[in-house]
Every structure is written in structure tokens, then in C-alpha cells.
Image (cartoon, rainbow, N blue to C red; front, side):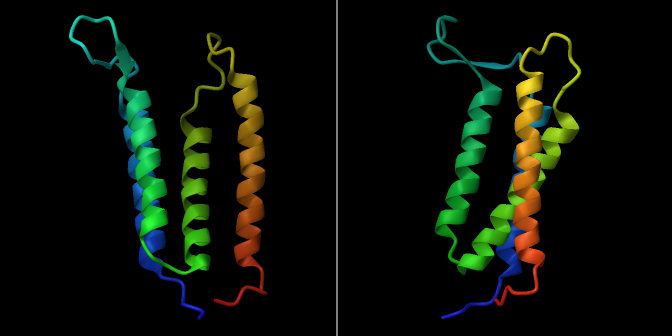
Length: 128
């Protein structure tokens, strides 16, 4: 049974990814969670938010029922938003950042993946 593409799932997936990026970008690195209260076990809040937000996006795409094409299109839109935010917000030219070259390389590979996925959806042979 071919179900049509439900745009609500794509739109809500994109909104979730924009909220994820906004939370991840605007939380300061200095905010930590003190689990025991004696400063012996500190966890950065940004890392917790990143994991929980990614989990929410993945569980949304798993449990909200839709056709396979809708899930693929929604995940492609989410990947595009996250890739664009990485390009816009990541400090590639920071002299204290020793990982900038590796992040730049994998950002280019991610851009290639985004292009390949969108070419798949813009091709004329897709029938929903």
C-alpha cells in the first residue's frame, strides 16, 4: 500500500531539528550538572541536551507512523538543517580549536550526503 507523503511529519521533524539546534547553540559551555552536590561528578549541560535532543528526534521518526518515503524526506530535511547549522555556527577559524580541520572535512562529506539525498528526492522517477 503506497501512502502519500504526509507533510505534517516533515514539517514537525524540521521544527524539532530547529529547536534542537537552537538549544544546542544558545546554551553556554560553562553550565554544568552537579549530580552529587559536591562538585565531584560534573557533566556539561550542552552534552546532555545534545543527547536528549537527538534521542527525541530519532524516537519521533521511529514512533510517528508514516510511509517510508515520508520518513526518508523528513530525515533528509533534519540532516539538512543540522548540516547548515554546523556550517553557520561552528567556529572553524578559532586558533584554539585543534579539531577544526577534521570537523571541516566531515562537514564537506556531510554536504555531499545532503546533496545526494536531495537529488534522490528531486529526481523525476520518485512516485509517492
